[in-house]
Image 1 (cartoon, rainbow, N blue to C red):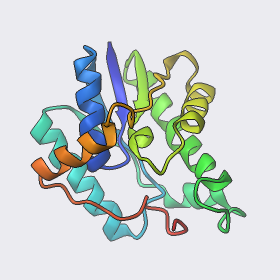
Image 2: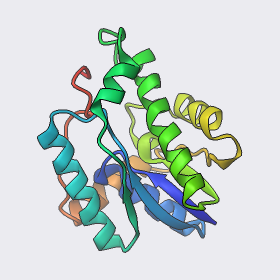
Image 3: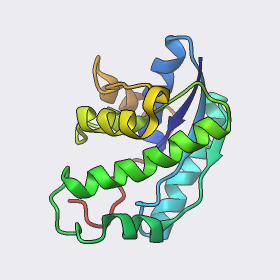
Length: 172
């Protein structure tokens, strides 16, 4: 099946890509992360996603950088704790856009690298994915079976930039 993988960063993408391919899927990537600030950080993560796409030979669709849309979506939730309502709105924005692109580009399904992080709640992310994508969403918890550990190994192999925060200027 042709699957569009929303990529939050190259580090997280490696093991997700590996898992999906092992399951027999043809994978394309989609980089849409209007939450990433400052601009230099956004560009660095985009370049690393492009680097991984070249190294792993998959197509990468680059979404618009729309920080204004993100700030509008999370307005009033700036002081929320990490993992709270602000994060849920951020996930929703990114997955809504991924669902739309998956449909427009003829993908049979879409999923996200967000669930590989031990700092993210896969249940919440998968619920949002199902809500915004309906039958197109391929729910996964990529951190299972040492997915995060494998992501770290692949990041070292490919010499990928490893950030120390999710990208949101309000994150811990």
